[in-house]
Image (cartoon, rainbow, N blue to C red):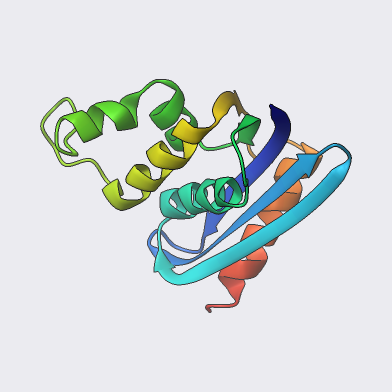
Length: 145
């Protein structure tokens, strides 16, 4: 099984507001950067989109080491929150609607293809790849101002 490391970040100017996402994929010394954005979105949606776009590039099941500063994404997948929301018809344990079910549906499907290894990073703490993803995401969000 191929081993890929993915770093992701999302940014939003206002929440909601113009947003951007960035991801860095690393495989055997190769590196690929991707990014994009939307005119009206939220930070969490951009965090999720970064991972969706990165996982969508993988052409076969891989061991994926994910590094993200988004507790929402990491905990939603690693702790099974999103799977639970889906089982309950996209409702949280308190009965309130889960946010972003469209993106969670994609993330659950994509992450289910791969063996995922989750790592939370403190944001804006000097980690080079996380900082790069942040710069990519911010630059994309600024295109919509």
